[in-house]
Image (tube, rainbow, N blue to C red; front, side):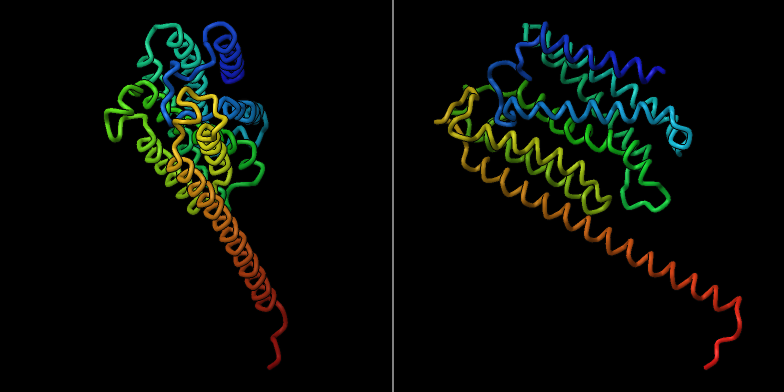
Length: 284
């Protein structure tokens, strides 16, 4: 029941931070170029729903006893707590308190999610795990982790970003060059998980985040740098990375289908051999 309580607290704090504490910004008005457009943050609707599915699954017999679930619950509680606290700290930061305190908290949030992902051994190629477990248990960390990976990088970037350096420094922290590196790092992580664990949900959330960065590099952007400050290189990088992630996800899915088909045919051959071994001799 602690998961239920903490999930409710997290959602309530989200509403409180959005309506009372925050000005709607992830950092102050001086967004770094890692910043996605405002519509991108609607992804939290999906994340909250999949978190709720995870919580409900704890009350379902066979799902409540999957390997590693006890430790996973503890890390999910930590995730709910640190995310809810971040929403408050970030809101206070927008009112002039401390941005770095929010950065520390979201780093702890990331640790909780990495541990949750690894403790559950989220891997959609596993044959010892039912699809019911994959959908009810795996989807929460698969959707939450990629967003917090980029959100952590975003928070650090926004906190360190000094827009006055754009005209003075060739590659300032938080500038277009920095953002290209962040996009590349997020893409490598997502592609690796797509190819090794067929985590398509992780890829989808990453692509959605990258699309938000891409939208902020369009001429009609509402970002502080305006149409004259958009980066063609960053825009191109997001397009390349989104396409690459699409290819990685497709490759992973096709490979999984081939592996499952081979396992199925192998199983049928074993059954056939067993039948032959226990029946009448086969005439040559």
